[in-house]
Length: 319
Image (cartoon, rainbow, N blue to C red; front, side):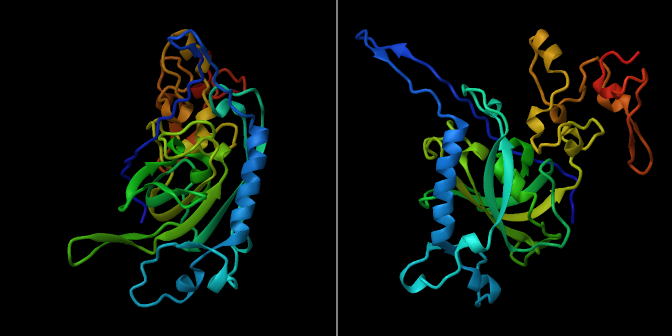
């Protein structure tokens, strides 16, 4: 079942690079952020080592024992577990290009390939997958490669994926969601056929040199375990009539670097919102919804009044 209610939470992240003088007159020097190309190599090495030496409880998922909780357990391949199949042989990989503009205070680097890994531990409903731009109902646990848990939810929560980490949202788009909310006799509820997944990705697809808390060191690769319940198909976050996924104009899977009217917003000293959060994408005073045509079947037509190849909703001068 796909629900049409949208609830979301989001993470705000700011990175400040500074230097100052102490009261005694001595200078405090702050080490500048590392280069993406340097960190991605280190992260790749540590992730490779991890997935070659760790496994998950796949045997329990294949043949669930009585009262199995369907929770992913990760462990080292050693001793009694020396014959287990490593994650390396089970996980799929995905390469995503990352540019330094994603973060604050970095030297300019463009399109640096970052490899992440994901695994559908339990499939949901076939073909029932969200995009990186959808609102999803899920629960998760996040940890470092050393096993330290830094965040998690015990219950399902709504998340609008563009507000979250790129590695996280891309992996979730590879999983399958469930199909219905089931109310139990005790008043609690579950989601039938929810998908269960595991993901591991480098810091360039996470927080890199920043962190929302002290529990995540700089340049940390992250692990997430996820139960994917439901999602809102064709989520339209800003309610401008255009599904958020269609506002990824450059098609790179990162909705936050598509902002048609960024220059005019900066000139007016107004907040710069990417298109998926902006009800007037070209900042011409006419709402995007009023510059497109949606027929009775939900099909969208994008008029181009002046014939310059730019649709009206992205063209501030379309007369």
